[in-house]
Structure formats: structure tokens, C-alpha cells
Length: 135
Image 1: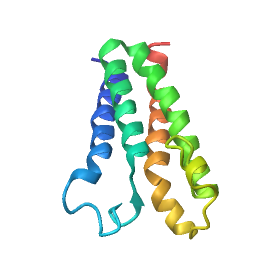
Image 2: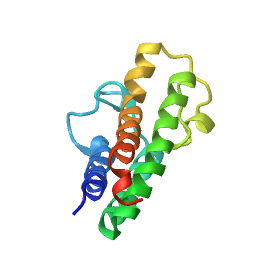
Image 3: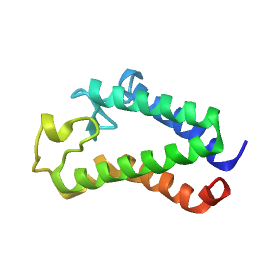
Image 4: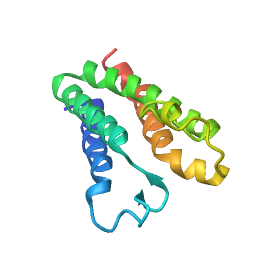
């Protein structure tokens, strides 16, 4: 199995882990925020599960499918994280539609959007480093 397929499989596991955060005792505070930073709702859980299924199918299908997943997923999630830094709300889980622009401390915005920036950025970096293997 090639590097991109392994990375896509890792994303499937990581995204299922993200979807399960609300359901593991002790990881959410009394306000329902995971790690005391961000509240995950049904939109977030649905997004993470759908992305995990996409990642798993791509990893299983082919190196080209894994590359496409990492490229599109990376671009979508990284852009969502950037929007979250600017507005306090992302678009993938409909936060910008449901909550609009939020006046939050910038440090909080960084912590809340770091997962999407990191996951998206790493996916794009993976394509840049290993994508030519299947191009």
C-alpha cells in the first residue's frame, strides 16, 4: 500500500475519532465543549463521519483516489479553518450559516480552528510531497 493510501486510511481513523469526541465520558465539559474549547454538534459529527467514509473508500480504492481525497479534503478543511480564524465560524458544518460572524478572542479562534488547519494543511502537504507518485 502506497504512502497516500496509508495517509488516507489514517484520516479515516482520525475523523472517526473526532466524530466520537462527544460520546467519550470525560472529554467534554459541563457546557458540552470538547477539551473545553469547541462544542461539536450533529453537523460536526455528520461532517466528520462523512469525511471518514470518504477517506476510507479512497484509501481502499487506489492511490489516485487517495490523492484526490487528500487534495480536495485538504483544500476544503484548510479553507474552513481560515474562515474560522477570520469569522469565528466555519462553513463545512454550516457554522457561518447557523451562527454567523462571532466575536471571539483570537487565541480561542486559533485553538478552535487548529484541527481543521492542521488536518487540511497536512493533507495538502502529503499531496505535494507524494502526489507525483500517482499523477
